[in-house]
Amino acid sequence: MRFMYFVFLLSFVFVSAVNADSGSGIGPVKFVKLDATINQKMVELGKTTFKTKCSQCHKIEKRYTGPQLLAVTKRRKPEWIMNMILNPLEMTKQDPTAKALQSKLLVQMANQNVGEINARAILEFFRNNDKALTEKEIQAVPDLSK
Image (cartoon, rainbow, N blue to C red; front, side, top):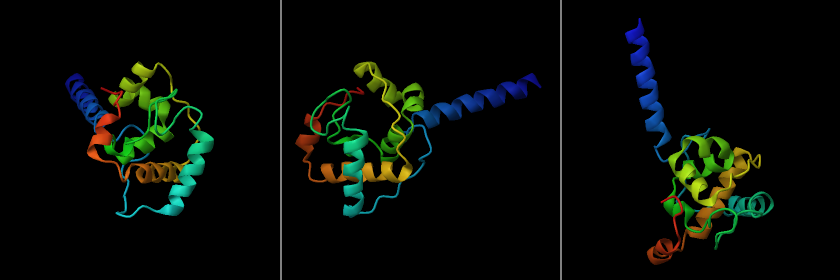
């Protein structure tokens, strides 16, 4: 019986470790289907939501209290971005990338109670900002998680 419990525990730890470092983050979003074209209505909702919920700590073009968000869609999976917006406390506890960001910024991202629709709209706003970036511009943005 102890052996079975040990095997179960070991498999749970292994699966948790694999899931925690999948690049998708920790939270409710497991898969995001992105259309090839950017939805401009969602961009506008995302821009408004970003301005009211996120811009106190985040800027697109520069580091502020939080990291610079230009090129974020080129560095992170869409699921990771949405999970960070929706679930910042668990992300900084369990996700390796979010933990690394927090260790450099020394600030806990606040939960702004953004719902999934608005988080998806913020993602679309980020995609719109990042769509025309060149590889050189992407490389010029520091990745604070490394």
